[in-house]
Image 1 (tube, helix red, strand yellow):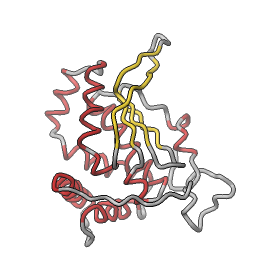
Image 2: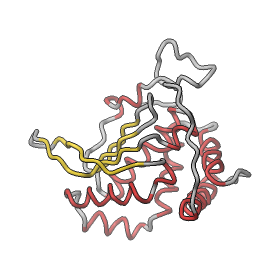
Image 3: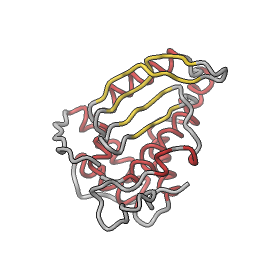
Image 4: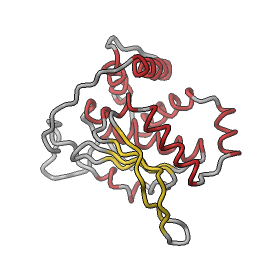
Length: 217
């Protein structure tokens, strides 16, 4: 990973409220609390979830947190009424880029090219470019990125909302692409599962470029 200066975030009231909400939901799902405040507490709980749990167990806890934020009735209505049309995907990208900057940092809606079943390409403004992911930067861990964010979020939108989502983290510059309307690849074809640990993580064998041991298919 390239050496980059760590971002400083000035969370506003809206950001702090969302951080507090997610932190509270994580405490309930985990059955533990954190003594840290703000975003540091959010990351601390993430680290607590990782300890002693398999990647699948980590993902399951995050899934519980995400589902606790949206009533099951709402999820059922969304799946039954809204198909992943261009408009629906573009609206999801707009809301995501505007509502979750507290979580991932500065981001913007971008146009993406999505392959279709008939092997053509459709362009739509349903992508989010995260310039430098706050969560990845603060956790400094490929495993936490994949198990605590990428996989649970993809599954939540794709399976619970019925709106396909693919997340493509860049572990070199800590940016990320979120593409609404694109079905995520199977784990064996997903580059994130073969990503070595970040260069700033000590004690692990990075010279061999083996996949991060905290991620498994």
